[in-house]
Image (cartoon, rainbow, N blue to C red):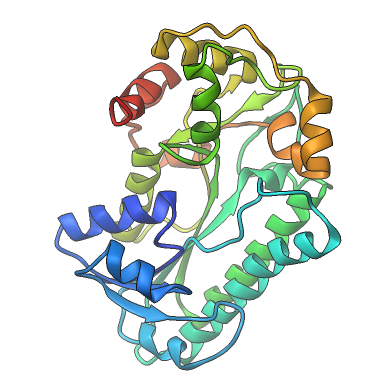
Length: 304
């Protein structure tokens, strides 16, 4: 297969492209930084693109067997000023709209689009359990996810199969876990905020496996929660991380510290949601890492 990928130089995209190449697929990497992408993936076809602007890059996906859309501005990176919020929204809503525009123009059209969303769609709760049929939340991240998914949904009218994956917190040597490891290594790790917030996670390899299954299984369509079946509360997750690392988990990070540093953006780590992968389990997806201890042990082997 020939697969076009946006966001391919990030934590998930790097893992995905490596796996696609290993199984003999050709990748077309759409990127804002072709020099970096070419250095990272010398055997991948790289096309420079401007994700929020129509252009010649859109012609490149004609004839591809699939498009995987992983692009989007990082959420936990600085305070959410009004300008920053607009960047976060535009990178997902407008970026996805331009990708759908490219699919509409392509001849032949890619028969499948796998597009990212996030479990932030559901809002936050310490008591509720969310599945794919749960309603959207009311906060900023929920509104971003709704706009993001609405743009992706327009591809269905073109006859392209659509799979939307609502990502949980991806575990790998980067992202949220990467920010937690240094304090644990210094024997200063502990739960963030109250510790009662839910932490719905997924191992990076399981996430890639979900995408690979979605490429191959023509019956997969619609919304899927890309989370492990065993979410944990933050306190329990940090205790598990401490056990795997042989470090204590005793020094909590108070809410107000993060709120002073990040403002509203602190929501990403101070609040959470218990999300279950009901539809993935219904189609028979088998998690390689269904529990956090095994997942963390596997990832930390790479950091040894």
